Length: 356
Image (cartoon, rainbow, N blue to C red):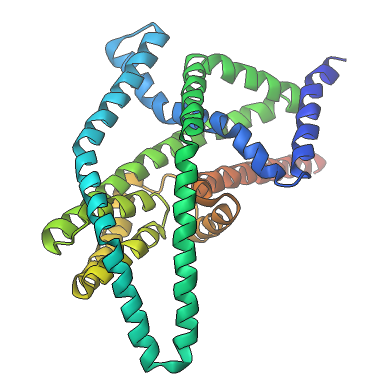
């Protein structure tokens, strides 16, 4: 009877999940509903090392006070960064919006000239131009829709923060409850192994995410410096921001962020655009060979082919969020598979020894 009571919530969860999956867009509904919970867990994971350091360093016994100081420190950092960067971003965006008609005119001229010289491709280029205009209109409508939904996004963010606060406050109790649940379902030995994996993954993934954010900030800053002072492009802040943000994606990030940067700069000045291409390739090599190895130190210990496959699958199924989280999730799955294989092999070895 006791096992039935414990398994009943798991069974209800199982039925609920599959009920939504078999509905139209059921998986999307589940992800949207659970998004504040996932974000709360991520925020708590990122802030926990700083919270632990703060409590040990300042000897703060009150957990709520330590959490308050942690969030206050993060908010102050964000406020300082926004205060410094926002004027430059606003200036670059205004400059870009002002130049958009000229850039479109140049793009149309390049396409027309290329089409006149290559009559076979002319009809295709016209169609591409039309589709590109349609895509830009769709992006504008998408941006307007997102602005309208900004209050929903703020609500989700506040909910995520509240969830992260409760996770940080009750983290020991949550861990004990989960251990008790796994102990009941799978036995003490398996539960202990699962928690060893979870602790190892927590250390590795939190270090990886923090390290990748630092590496991306350095990469974005290098692009900004090169764009503003070496090549003297008109939109250095946008260049650094795009490539720095996209660089969170392993291997392909710099290239993904570099494509729109190159298109804008080539349309503005082809020579500077070509120099920017060379500079981005140099920065990518610096990032891959120097920055990432020193900061990340191969924390996740997974092969490049697994990372590439996980990025393709994550991006295809979950879009931008899937691209960002693909590598940590792939590491999580790999660790559980490795642990399961080691457990089974040890079980077979024990059975073989007992038999002989």
